Length: 207
Image 1 (cartoon, rainbow, N blue to C red):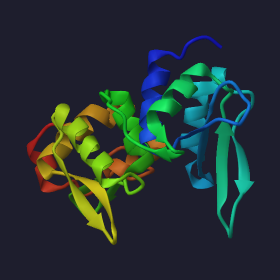
Image 2: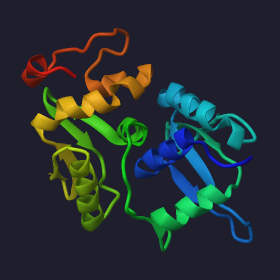
Image 3: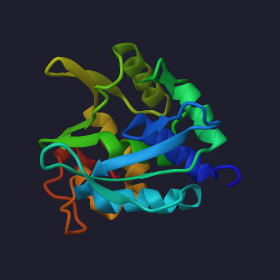
């Protein structure tokens, strides 16, 4: 299969910050990546598959889960690069945050996986799966690229909320990398190309 491309490596970082999952079967030499989303995000899963197609044996398949949920997922082949990333991102089988430098692709994939918009001006990254210490590491990584954010308590867990002043810059970095079906996370109507009800601070700054 050869080495991963730069694009694939950036994607891998972004999806491991989000919903991607790496695991290794006992007795096997290397780890593999699992991509698993709801069937409602079929287009997004197929975009991920095309990006990693040379690392897979077969395409995404639907699978019924508990209750009415239907998942859409695929697995990659085993690869030494996945083993390296597993050793970075997992400790005692639990996801953790290594020292990273985010680029536009990894940030965009992370946002498509875990980003959400609430109301007119609140943009979040749903990082509740990570420890508080790891979330502070994430805040520092965002601050390194000029994005200010804080931790926001969501019931009993915390997640990342972007400062209003940083949202135009965030969107400026990731917007061209967001696929059409995920544009709604930026405030776009899913069947249109214009953003709905933009917050007032968007009107004053170019994105």
